[in-house]
Length: 565
Image (cartoon, rainbow, N blue to C red; front, side, top):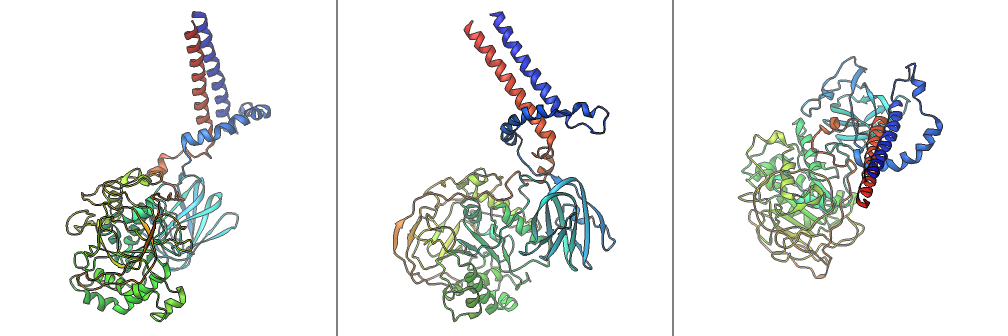
């Protein structure tokens, strides 16, 4: 027995010795090539050929073991056409920016090669990046103020050209690999939306509509388009908070931020004050245009009484209800009809509407896309991106006066909801030309929990208690709809004929282009040295894998002989 044990131990030593020798040769590739002995450390062609198959077979193992994560390359501004040195774009703070007083070219360099640039601006504008080989790439074409540019080559420097008046907030450079979760890779606004969310101000979408966006956009992958009635261009940080909040909850289509209505103070107790400031007819025309442009199946909008009585919220809700019956009438606001065509919206839910109510239990709706964090908690996380608004007493609540679970069907062309089913997608008719392909309308399970969606990475938050849920969806044939407006909800809508129920099956949410690495920016530092393109990582990780394999083999041989004896 002792002899066989010795044979096993000898096998282990030989395996480790071979691994150490191989690992040493890999390490030798990293030595300074200017060293006198560097030539002796170079592996021979024969050795490289013999190891080629091992490297190929281990590539995916190493990649899986260490992860392919982008590294934030440190940038330094080396020159500027206006002779200024700007530090604010490199301070990683959205509360600061620099304004270009003339057309300006800034030159940046990094000791770390990078393949991508991430730019944050105060206002949308066109900008240009010039690479060392003379290649020029255009940014700002889609009107994004947070934009990632793929350079399609590895560089250590670039020139950024900004027009006069541009305001640069932050700029970053990243290596290839999986980006940190806070880097936003936006898709353009969708042509035909499944859901159209209509908040008045940035943060309203989380406060009053709760888990609607995390669930329908983040979890189920529906096309959710958000349109803000007002803009916050006079409050520099709020546009950044707006985008950060939407990105956090899984919205991937860039929002529409109205350039027609600034966030001007209106007497919160009076809709007449808001109508005087914004112009009721102007807001109505805006609503009709937005509805025609995105041709949504379901609209989610404010409380008709403005939640806490905000006049602009009331005006927003009233004009949405007025606009809905006009969207398929080409004679109503013919300019937008000619530009986008007409449409017929199937359903509209208003927050706290008391007729045909539904109560959606966001709290008891775990989202696989966000590591089983509830839809309510994700709404809280989205709201927490609006740091500038923390001085007010509002918070995401699923109980009390502003309960974000409570909605009512204020407009329908597909019939009334089934009482107690609590499903915004009930009776929705799906077509290939608008929104997702024809198929099922995923629904929340009936009583206490939700069906599981597709997996993904995310983070957690905290919310408040509540109850209610939504259930299964069924198809229906469109019929005439009826809208209601005024201070108190009233009236009934016409019904549609429900035909066949869609199977209760969820459509997988697409993986976002940026991936989900972690919740904080520290990932760019934690991931340093983990990029697959770092040869030292390849050598170290492969060495560890081979060492582990040698030990496992040795222990297996030893155990075998021990068992036989």
